[in-house]
Length: 84
Image (cartoon, rainbow, N blue to C red; front, side, top):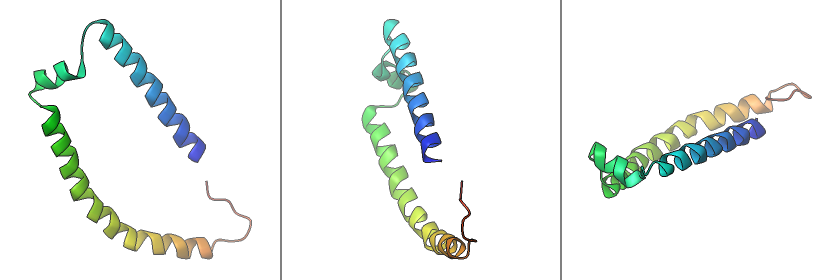
């Protein structure tokens, strides 16, 4: 499962590199795209910070329920079975 996740991340990184190279060839930059849609890099960073501040407490709250349930299910799993 971890190998599949890593492979997917590598594919996304390679595709992003290819598309970025093509866009750079045509003179299109990230600053230009952000300017065209009316977002400054500072505003984008602020939105990302706000998203993180909102998401972190919710993730922790959910983990308080999910992790113990997973642990109990893990303990009572029959011997010799793999989780994939």
